[in-house]
Amino acid sequence: MKKHSVNVVIIGAGTAGLAAYRAVKTAGMQVVLVEGGVFGTTCARVGCMPSKLLIAAAESAHEINRWNRFGLKWEGKLKVDGHAVMERVRRERDRFVGFVLDSVSGIPEEELLRGRAVFENDHCLNVGEHARVEFDQAVIATGSSPYIPPLLRNLGDRLVVNDDIFEWETLPRSVAVFGLGVIGLELGQALHRLGVRVRFFSRGTTFGNLSDPEIRQAALEAFKAELAIEEDCVVENAVSTEDNVIIYYRNSHGVEHEERFEYVFAATGRRPNVDSLGLRETSLKLDGVGVPFFNLQTGQCNQSHVFIAGDATGELPLLHEAADEGRIAGENAARFPNVLKFFRRTPLNVVFSDPGLAVVGTRYADLCERSFVTGSVSFEDQGRSRIILKNQGRLNVYVDRIKGRILGAEMVGPAAEHLGHLLAWAVQDGMTVSSALEKPFYHPVVEEGLRTALRDAYTKLSV
Image (tube, rainbow, N blue to C red; front, top):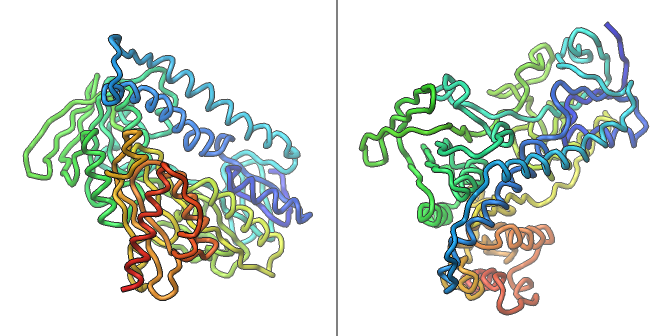
């Protein structure tokens, strides 16, 4: 077994791990990067990039279905070539992954170890059976993996997660989607628009990333107009056969149903990859799922020499957050024990569905102890939204009642990714409603809907 002695060991070569590695290298410290899986990052390989490729194909196909509402006629019939769709997804996915692999290939051989890392004690870990690393500080950046509910674990090859979908050579005939979170909504709607028969199964109040009941209800109404959603149903059994899966369930009215699907897609959340790290051999205090308690502004675990970043925290599974957290963890690991609290950007979470979802700044659910007003707009009669036939949804902007500052927002509607960015910048800059209303708004644009919500909030502040 080869022995290594370094200042910092980084476990995981994804977005967070690579950011931490660069930070440690910049500080001039000795470092090794350990990776037990494939290189390429979750985002590039099975996350944000391949999912948007599938969504782009679905959006193009769906546009034809809206032509008649514009008064346009086409006598032909759209044919979705599943093989061609998935071939492009994989080709472009591999291109994005290639960029990441190019960056990894530049890491010196002596600083990159392949294998599963397991802590032996607070300052030593083993990598497989071939390497032993003694370290001063460590960064845990092991990412996350899909969570499979017990009910679905015996479905064999008929069960897929998002990682599997992008390996399909063609599109299936039917898919049962479990979960109305971000991944389920994005990929489930995309499959539906590409001609796959899709039904969503959900239990509880989760809908994308929303916490505002009013916005959630508006989203549910918009999506139910297009998609088959069994909200708050009880799935009693799922049985795999040679050709399909039979789902036995009772809908929200208690009526029993039986339906067959070619595949079941488990979009039921992700769990941090910490179970196999041997963290119980260390002095770190762990939460109920085995993640060390940590400080979000420093990445430091339990005031110790160990830091954590990215999806492994279980907090903000987003690429830009993982990159920031990796850099913060890496810099603090390199400068330990002189740990600094770093500035964190305004939270921004977008779902690339249609209509889109966005949560910005302080969520509705986290405003319970704040004195605030809500400025609202419905996109149903918003000018530009009606022109482009995207007039669904609602935006709620939360404003501090005393100072008039914009605290956050939740929305379902058109241009969510763009309105979300505008609001995130406004929140981060401490903008007030009155100063935001002084900014230019062109006509006719969807952003005028934001102005309507701000005006509504301004009126309520004057009461």
